[in-house]
Image (cartoon, rainbow, N blue to C red; front, side, top):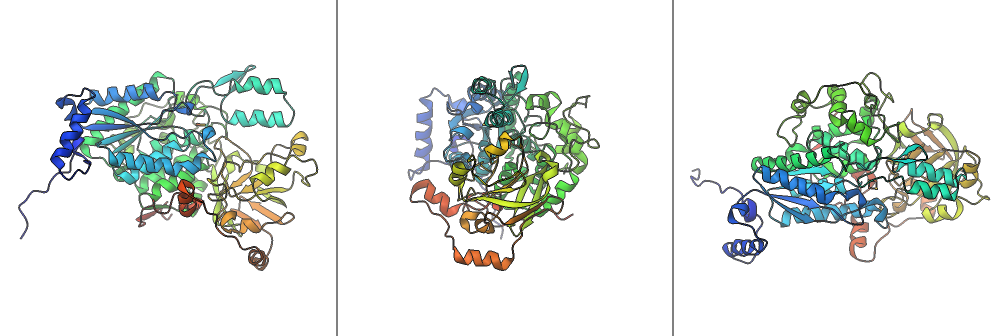
Length: 581
Ligand code: FES
């Protein structure tokens, strides 16, 4: 016989997740007593509680507007009748993370997940921006299962150097390359250093931070139109206020991440990644985020999408403009309007409306030159291509939209560096036996080899070639490169050298073939020879002695699994995206 007892509704507000003292009534009594020490009334404490993850840090200028954003989010929460409560988590900045920010991304995701779970909140606003912070927060929130909404800090403004517009970090690399090639002197490189980062906020090009902001909006986990407003603008503060009000409605309607971050949402995000000429890091982060929800990102499917999704956004490093121009051109709503025929319009967003409904209500299109019409792209296919071959049986990535077309079909002699230190010691040596037709190979900068898969895949052109005017060469590694970098660079070779992938056995003098047209990356030696080299030099996975490094080394997965920890991924796979054609 069916029970007539009504199921208990889940605890909300301050009643959520009580600390265990063996007496729940006392636990709530004590919790309220303590928080009343901060001056709250019973009325305030009875409201939906909206947590705000504060990643402000003096080590993180990309999040330098966090105090203003928190104030605006709180205003939005209170306008909608909620109680905002901000709390700190780890903050990770690219240039202040040793050995790499990627090494710390999973730690930040664990911190975010556990603090969302440990503290009472009915919804959470995630304030992130710098490259690894948005994926870390969304990975953690996806696992915590509490309604969550992403707010990014927004892009920095551009600067001006001797009459030329500049911005981090594509121009950082360009000017450093010119300095290495002795085209500019020490005084000029010091001058430009003052201008590259003109304000707080994230890098001003379509690097990883901007890519992840656009992907979050494409996923529906951010307010519509929330990706592009620069950090120091009134628009950014309005997005923050709107994020606060939206979070309260999400709390009331229990709009949890699994309802938004679906297979369809990830496929929409992959389309956007391709069409913005986005960072190669985007694919690693999307894979990790999807993996938390039991969704596999299929690299072969990504490549299929890439053949039918053009690059429409004319931003550096693939194009000309900067994020503030993208915002003025209409931002993500304008791009999604162009991509509309390729998107799953029934995907749900944080507003409770579908992507299609949001697009129907979006402002009308206007003439601009940053977001191209679908039939007039800046690059006819997607920004990324997936390569395979005996050098990368688990796949590798190339950002074809930022590569040199002349080098995309290339065969050359390998010049091998065994690790980053070997490269640093020899690359600028005039005695290095290298020509512009050779293929530079760098090993052991993968997930465990780096460790943390450093963005060292953007190998410098050997000094003697740089001086001779060589700007690009085919470069191959198991590492990553910054989303702000450009060149004919093969990345994420899987499996990595440090765990015994074929890359480990490549020697200087081997012939290597890159064919982006055929999606191939191969070393022209036989399987028997590769096996003979592997047997002669068996490789053991590196380990860490203690602490987080030990956990990292034991648990980190390869690039095709998002470089997440194996124990953080969902235990079962529900679906694989993109679906079959
Ligand atoms: Fe923070 Fe580029 S260093 S976004």
